[in-house]
Image (cartoon, rainbow, N blue to C red; front, top):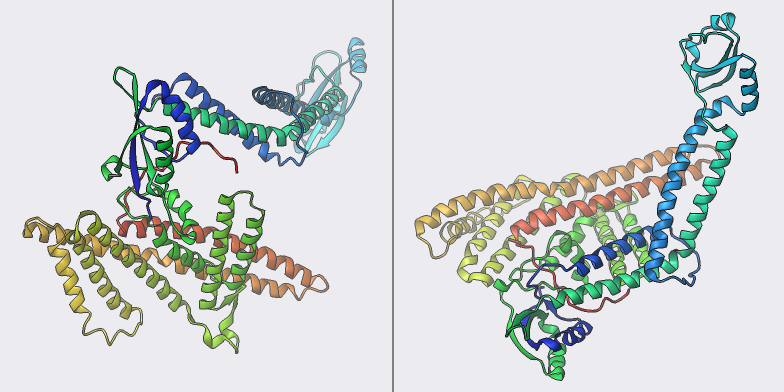
Length: 596
């Protein structure tokens, strides 16, 4: 649900304004209403610094250093500059290393030789050309015509020299010109270069734990400074700049804390109930189960203030959809164990909540695995003791079950939209929504017969709610308007409802496809693995490795698709039928940034 907001306006003497902001920031409950997005040079500088520190922290964390935290004698900014210099030096050395390696690669086929001897030979009037060509392009007559010596053969290329005294022989081969340095010099340079890179890496690794702590603290400090200065610009000057008027929002549940503070400080203030037209910020407040799914809601967008928070409504469906895509009890157990382990290792509450979500997805996989009778790709329906208790027994039933879940979620969304319209605009504005619900429900019952469901006891009555739904759609889609306009608008609405409904329902077939494909992959892994058991001696070991790899890959693919596709069904099909509108403004209180 969306927390109710109250708007506060504070009237302050200009000399008391900064002191008030300092105490307000310490309180950390008010979402300040912005009056300007202009940024001073200092704000811009702070933003750049935050980005700089954040990027460096991200890089240092990738090092995964296990070094002990050391005392750093440098100021934080000086340490940042030193790390920047080290990184720039490293990049420069890496480019040099790449160049050296290329030169070594060029010289390597010719091996180590005495450059001084080469000069002495040249001084005695004998010249040497260095050539290379493909082995099959080398002509044997060259050896008969000139003093040719093959030096090396590498990767199908011949490296050879030709000695001459007068004119250089014209051979159909590439001519190689030597660098100013010998191969030995380049190899020595490479060794020194690699040592420099190691020294820099060691420095970054050693300094990493201390630097991350210092930089994260500095980031929080800079953000607080930024927030404070930005807040200082948001007040409206009045009375020839002697008075500041600051506006902000606070959740009603936190209001008492603010009121006590204002009484202590003796601040003149006014309060009013949040109105949709003022665009109050959005703060979601749900129970523990629904709160775990809030990050998924925020991945799309927050709702407007007068909308419904759809998180608690889609959360059970999302969980079931994930289980549908990974309907296997063994996979569910693995996910639960993995989630609990990672939750135990998680360092902050946000990560612990994410891991708990994995545990819930695992529970859903166990539930759906029990319904379809699957454990590690094996079919429980073939087991004598429990086979008869499996609810869903074939692919047709899985297909129908996917469509049934779709129908239920879409109708649920339609009803939510109808109730929302009644709350926002009055009862009669939600009547057509009820009509859509009744009409689509009737169509769904009729359609179920085509899929093999026994609806004979309802056949004689289904048409009556359908007619009632049609009546409500045609005559109540635009309350307060001319009946003719209502009918015409109702026809257009009916067209959209029917075409949209069937399109949305078909989208839920993806659940069937993903669930069945996961089961088939598990079955294939088991079949291939069983054949490996026949391998003498090493068979059981190979079987175990293959089963771990095969089912691990199947589970990873299922988990990915089990998250992505339910997200699509939620954001597209469900949100559309529930009449979701956004984006709402996120509630961001002006306060101190706490470390995790």
